Image (cartoon, one colour):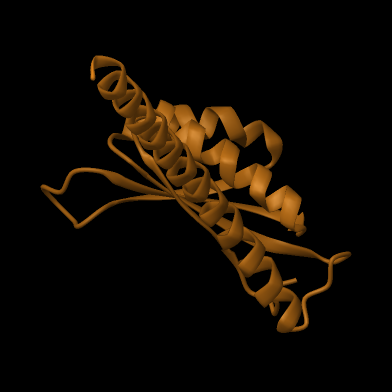
Length: 137
């Protein structure tokens, strides 16, 4: 009877771990799918893989210091920036907008998104994604 109980508990633990792993993996693929969808939408709107576009990247950060620190990391790569206090006076947090002219591919945009998610989290913030307009070449 004891062995049956131990086996059932072990099976339940393995099942739970597998569910958690599957959900974690699906969460990452949803992010990657978002980048792929945006690139696909750009192509459908007439975008060209060989044409550089102005790409806008968006971050929410808690302080001006966090904005400055993140800017310091990616500014040498040729990004330009603007930032705003979110919600006006008395609000907490800043919106940081980074812009760079890039040739757009799914793998490159997934790399940027993955890297920027980590950078934003390291500075206490959140990466909100990217966008471009095919008319802005």
